[in-house]
Image (tube, rainbow, N blue to C red; front, side):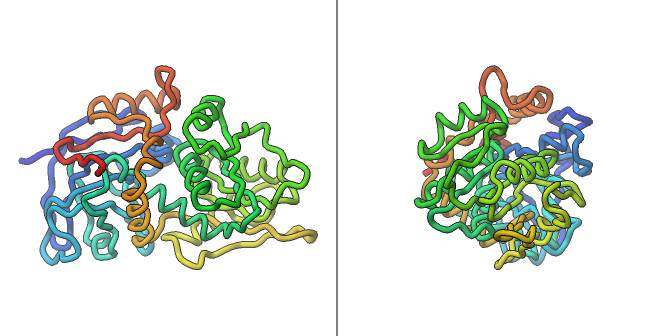
Length: 369
């Protein structure tokens, strides 16, 4: 029996184990991941903060098609793809959550996902490591459609993980006339971002966020883990007050959760309303009876077209984004670092881990052109 190696979680620990390698059936596709990144949601699952059942995590990575089942015409062996992890019409397919993810050397993709176009070609020029940013960048870019920023306004990004740093850096290059403020939850995160991001980005600590006299209208991007999402909404309301115009929730949120200051706004429902990244986005507007209303949006996943656009941006400008991939490791050492992150947090041996990328099949890795 043919086997492959996989990072399998057992409790809070992950181990590299051998697993049987399946043959694709009708409509199915077998992938070989090149490199896969560990996101904050993966860490939450490893810490037992989420009950997603998949023993193999991972949904952000570059893959090569190894074999296709009968009837598959959308892709062929040798194609490079990313997998859209969120099926907009089938909740039973959520890659790395309720079906086995990319932290393994071979991944079988179900026929329903293949037929829905969830395998998105990325071409040969994009490096394997940089390709792990395709899905995060696409999600960030969808947020701009939702927030609808205008010149002279302010973007406040709450959260200094990969998504927060990526959003702040991307916004600086897209919106020259928008002030970008990144709100940090740790001193280590603030120090890293000040050293590595565009110098025009304004950095403040979580506890120091406050409006200045004459501050512009503020649009807030929530990029925290779901256990901090509601707190972030409340913080922004209390510190930014009447300058607030909109919230967009990228990070997760518990079902039925609502901020203290926005009764009736179901943050989970707002996020779920844009599953798959529809355009125009669906919005909820809250009004306290005085002043302008506050718009709420969020999303779970994006379209294949959005992923393709993000892959194009990363291919054209890899130098702008690769600094966010702070740690690149082979399979065994990557699994060891994964366990250390779960046990001890983002600061490992004095270095901040903004994003860990694990090389799954080193013989398939592609360097950036």
